[in-house]
Length: 380
Image 1 (cartoon, rainbow, N blue to C red):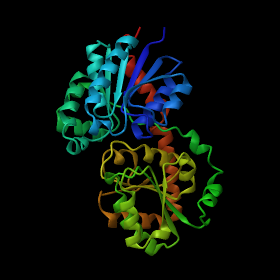
Image 2: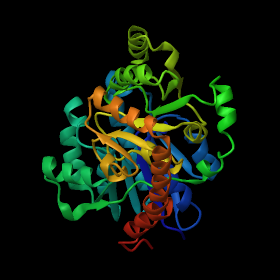
Image 3: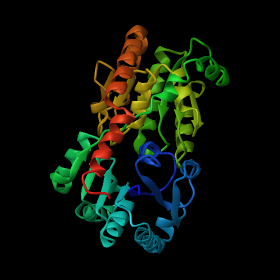
Image 4: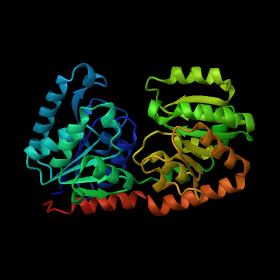
C-alpha cells in the first residue's frame, strides 16, 4: 500500500504556495504516494485540477471573508480536519501558510501522525499585520516535526525573530516547471497582436496580485520616469485585484501615463505573456521566495526586483538582473532604464537567468528534497 500524505492549505486559489503544492502533488500522487488535499476555504480554481488528477479534495467549508466575519467557523473547520486525519490515518500531514499551519499541526499531533510538516513561505511580516497569527505560528512551530522554508532569508528571519529550533528547519527552494516556457516560443507575435502592441514596443511585465505590499504604487511612479525616457514602453500589470485597483488607476491618471499601463487582471496565459515581454519587474515590499522571479528567469527575461526576502538568492545582481532597495521608485526607474538602454546586455542576462533556473530551481530538485524529508521516517 502506498503511504498517504495529507496536504493542508488555506485555499486553492492561484498563489505561490498553492503552485508549489500543485507541482509537488502532481509528481507524487499515484506514483509513490496517495495524496489528499484539505483546503480551509471551499472551491478555488485549483480544485478541479486536483480532482482531475484523482486527488481527493476536502474542505473546511469557509468562504473568503469568513475568518473576519465569522471566526467561529474556524473551530468547526478544525473539527472537520481532525476527523479527516483520523479517517485517513496519513503517514504525513504537510501544511502551508499561516493559521492553517496551526490547525494542521494541531490535528496531526492529536492524531499522532508520524510526521507533521509545516512550511513557512514568507518572512514574519504577516504577524505585524495580523498580531493574532504570531502565537499561532509559534505553536505551529513547536508542534511541527520539521519546518520547510523556501529561502535562506526566511530561515534567518524565523531564527532571529521567533527563536525556532534550527534542527527542525529544512531549506527547499521553490521549483519552476520550464515546459510551458519552451512551448510558447512562437506565441510572442500573437500575444502582442492580441494586446494591440507594436513589434517595437518595449514591454515591461509585473506579475503580482494587486495588494499594497506588492509595490505597484512604487512601480507606477517609476513607470512615469521610464516612459519620459522611452515613450514606446508599456507596463503590463498581471494579477487579481485585491481591492486597490481603483487607487492604482487613479495614480495612473494623475501621473498621465494612461497609454503606457495595462491592467490585465488574472490571466491563464502567463508563460506566453512573459515570453512576449522584455523585462520582468517585481517591486514588492516583502517576499519569501518569488515564483514569479523563477518563471521570469525560465522565460529568459532579465529581472529587476527589490531586495526583500529571498529575491537576492534568485536574482544575481548585475549578472541576471538588478536587485534594488524596496520602496524606492527612482532606483527602480534607473535600473529599468539601464536595461532598456542596452538591449543586448538585457538579452544576455535573460539567457543567464534561464540557465540558472534550469540548474538551480528545478521541479526535480524540489520534489527530491521533499521525498527525502518524507522518507526520514518509516512510512510503511
